[in-house]
Length: 114
Length: 113
Image (cartoon, rainbow over all chains, first blue to last red; front, side, top):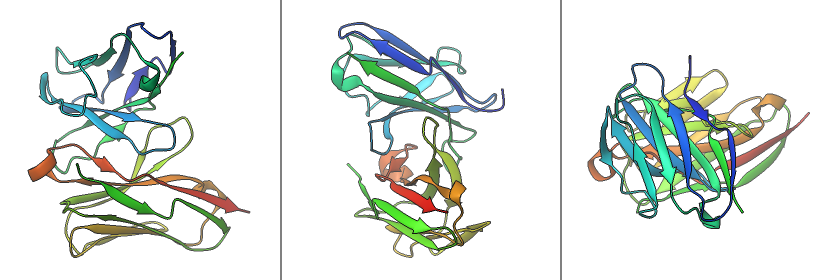
């Protein structure tokens, strides 16, 4: 496709459930980023991949959050034992270059934990 | 961590008016970006700035990278109804924070026809 795609677009989970959010970056983009956006706030960095290597995971809020990009293309953000405070929009972005590379964002996955 | 202070939080203007919003930081960024986000969508890049003092235009939008590298502003001239949305500034400081973007809290723009 032409842009970054994410699925599902909406996810409702019961507290304690595990969820998996998928990101398909723009073809050929080596850098992939995950951000979390709470209601009424700007996106906040979670983690960053260059190809399949996770170079920065310092933004992940707890060890319940895990991200992978095994073949350097599609990425999955997994949240284990979801909590209500995990409710947010999860945005994925990709770029051709890590530095000075325009980050193109997907539409996001809106997660609601009940 | 780094924080960006974006103002104003919201603006209500009449169609045809000019708009100005800005971001300031206590630390230096070497790239400043301005994004627009519509409801239910991801942020879309409007303007990217890579050099202190740089002034860049994109149609009715003009943005500047502050000379101190700690601030940036975005101007929208002759606003139209489709300018409605949330505008975010974002900075990148590779030496201290790697490739991540740090975002401001956004400016909600409402344009009355």
